[in-house]
Figure 1: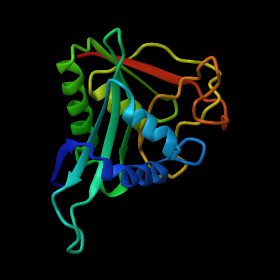
Figure 2: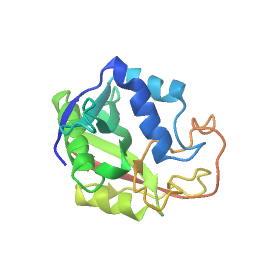
Figure 3: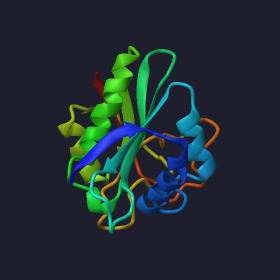
Length: 184
């Protein structure tokens, strides 16, 4: 699959939200408000992957996106990488991750962290292949991160439970998380 990376445009939002809803089950997928808040956050980077092949004579299709951010201490955080089923295993996720890392590096980010479920073997292998290493396992997390769809190998991050409870609604089951980190 041929695709390009480009910056997020406001008119992309509903498509990105729809992709997120298809990749993750209710309670795990972001609400419109949550996704919009992450995209608009100060220090946020949102990159879109767009196919070069028009589908059925229509306009180019968005096949994936990444949302990442940098905090005031120079630490990057991958919030989510979402790739549509038909575009998986074609390099879209790898290019999105590299593009976000490049943008974070350009604003003096020293390292990037993310979280994924310990039972999401595809995500664990993906991140390790890209130089991320296990920092720690977070026990007793009350959030299921893996998509129930057998064909979905999406990589979800940003689910470490905060003091005020999960920003993603009620937890679905106990699933430890594996935070990863990589210097950029």
